[in-house]
Amino acid sequence: MDFELNEEQKMIKEAVAELAQAEIKPYVKKIDEEKKIPDSIIKGLADLGILGMTVSPEFGGSAADPVTTGVVAEELAKADFSCAVPTFFLVQCAWGYVLDKYGQREAKEAILPWVTKGQAFLGIASTEPEAGSDVANIKTRADKRDKAYILNGEKMFISGLAEILNQLPKGGGYVTLAKTEFQRGAKGISLFYVPVKGTRGISPTYLEEWGRRGISTGGFAMEDVVIPENYLIGQENKGFYYAMEGFDLARALIAVVSSSAAQSALSQAMDYLKIRQAFGQPIGKFEGLQFKVAENWAKLEAAKLLGYRALWTYGEEQRGKKSRWETTRLCAEAKMLAPVFAFEAINEAIQCFGAFGYTEECPLHLALRGVRSYYWAEGTVEIMKIIVGRELLGKEFIAYR
Ligand SMILES: Cc1cc2nc3c(=O)[nH]c(=O)nc-3n(C[C@H](O)[C@H](O)[C@H](O)COP(=O)(O)OP(=O)(O)OC[C@H]3O[C@@H](n4cnc5c(N)ncnc54)[C@H](O)[C@@H]3O)c2cc1C
Image (cartoon, rainbow, N blue to C red; front, side, top):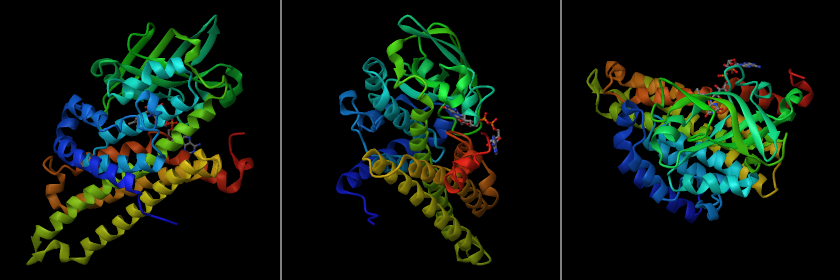
């Protein structure tokens, strides 16, 4: 067992930390207020070669392994504890990986080179107004006609829509779940690359959220949207299983991001504990406050290590050394614990600031609101428990069959 990063990972970590601390951290409040990651930050990430870093070099990525991707996510979250920039990063790594692995050349060429250049966004469109956790129940359908698929349906709570439609020069789109065999539940779902900007039949909606506001959320209705047949990702009716690979990667990365964002918040609280005086001494001398820091720090270390263990296992699975099920369980375990530990830790960190913690001047509310999104995004905490329970007890204990 080796907990050391290799030399290449250490170099990447240092380079990302330098960029993130200098170019992202000072602007976190502005990002939240203006509800937008500045173009200069996106360009900085692209110039460093980390956007879509999981995709193949022929599309501008570096086929980065999951642990290295986690190292980058950790540094981004340390700087931007509102979680907007890390989300922008991790979503594209997860879904860029799936498109690169299973997609056809035409779809990959249409989007991946622009993702890695920071000129387009690639996300996931799974959730619908009437189906979130219950993915098998989605209503969007894709019907084959000649050399095209016709998509009808609606997606909701989708990250990155304003970036695609209003910010990035080449737009972007989504790895989108749609039914190709309607009656077969999960076994009738296929994955498609759906470009959103400039595609006829797409009507967007925007949502106002109270956290990680630097990355937008919205929805889009599809009415007779025509996409080329080669935008089908992998084989028909296997989309649910490809999508789970993307969710697993995103979940493990979210565990690292949540823990890192919360440790950044705790570090700020510790600085305050050293200078704030009460009862004639720095409040950091009181064990009541030390215990808050110690307990939460240890829980965050545990959650982060579980996230890295899930990422490492994901990499081993890519090399054929671990099973898909073990990977899925570890990713779900990490995602089940980390956002909850993170939210509780940030709440305690805010408590250390006294009334100042409740002012806009104290930025920790950005972190609190940011990590809270991960109770839902990429699969809820409750669904993670269902996955872990299924893997521990056996598939015959799934309640929905
Ligand atoms: C900030 C943010 C960004 C998001 N970005 C995206 C995105 O880019 N793409 C995308 O496709 N989706 C996205 N989502 C949606 C997210 O994936 C869904 O919110 C999530 O899957 C849950 O679906 P739902 O909101 O419809 O809740 P529901 O499925 O309606 O569930 C409601 C509640 O019931 C619980 N629940 C449901 N079933 C069970 C059960 N069997 N046992 C116990 N509890 C249960 C859930 O955990 C939840 O707490 C995003 C969500 C958020 C908050």
